[in-house]
Length: 144
Image (spheres, rainbow, N blue to C red):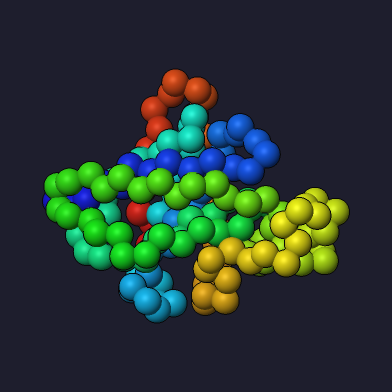
């Protein structure tokens, strides 16, 4: 048996349904243990199959900077509710930084970086499913 993540997230300047990628790290390190992805519908998503444990959890979506939540506890057979807040826009180049190459998109976020900047690895997961229509089933899964 494993744990379930019930997550919420919003996207700066947009009410969109899109995929998010989550990276689970050993707390206080940049050691990635596994990834997951999920479609976000109406600001919410669910990921099943998370191994029990305590993790720092990073979330990111295309065009947005990452957010890192620290020391999230996942207990076998239970739901863990995490509100990731709002993802700031502006990461057009996909490097988790808002730099001159992203300038035309987000003047307001210039100079900001995502919480997980510099962590080894990438955010791209081609297996991530397309978001379902509003009111459709919404769940994600652990992929590595």
